[in-house]
Image (cartoon, rainbow, N blue to C red; front, side):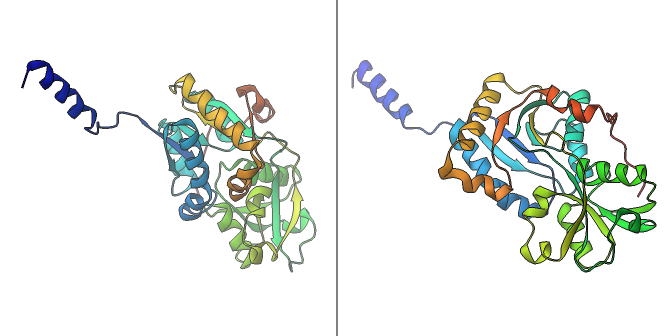
Length: 274
């Protein structure tokens, strides 16, 4: 066989050898407002869509509870993260996470819920009560609701139960007199649970949860993910992906969109002893 023929065969042989993938895997983490199993079921279709649309390898992540999620953000472990507004203010400042998008046409509001059959009718009725919250740094469900209670001189005992679902379940089962939450997680709770709960109070609206990216993420990757989020939001045939996570769609965002949260003066993460 001539030298040139051998070269041709070598090139053809190499053409059909599967080369190892060198593409980096990007992690997309979601604040654990529900159990990890429920979170994966609801968010994986969005992750799959983003991966398919952008051609990037994106994997779903969450944490066992909100404090663990905060520790991972502190360490810069996530490439992309859906975090609460308070988290964004903190980790934008300390780690440099950059806002990419947030839900369109929505504001986040803190709620206080009680059992449907509870005799509690006003916030003052909660004086001295044990109230369930997801975690100390849950923005609307804990920080906003707690601040309003204190402002109105309602003394209460906070109990942290790790997730929004756990708050609603503990109130449904009368473990606690009331609980803090938000409309999005309440609306996607099981119907049997929602029917047993009543919204006692809701806060004013704030800029909702951002999808933010690590400061080292390439700008091309950021833009590709944003393009995918906007395309998804405008594609009615894919609305089931958004409905699974209880969101209406996304718009591009800037870090300054959360100045309303910054004005509250809570720019450092602190965890009271439980």
